[in-house]
Image (cartoon, rainbow, N blue to C red):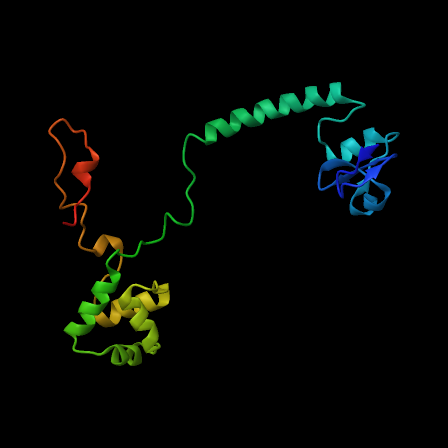
Length: 184
């Protein structure tokens, strides 16, 4: 007896079906979950799915697929040498201390959180969450804050902690102790 690869039931006459590209030997109850693969017409089924591993014409297909896969791998290796650009390359990063920047700019203008929220036509709870660092401002809110408070919340416009760091050894190699700041 053979076990059904779909439900686990034991069956004496399994049928081969194709479910999302995978061939499974299943019982008669599970044949409705896929397309039945008939052994007599395996050549037409294999060309329909073009898996390249059919039982009747494996020699012809493997030679054909070997030639195409070799050319596709060589073209993909040449394109993998340069990194593709994605949508994050064009995005500005928010300053890590955006909450302190917003709070200090608001206090410099002598506004309360609710006053700032009224000026920006936003909820005061949103301003409170931004100043606590609980939430990131959306692009729209970030633009409103930057225009009204006359600040820059992008990472380039922040204090630039990396530029003031002057640790390291004269040999140019760094250890973890050169980078970590202790909070004693």
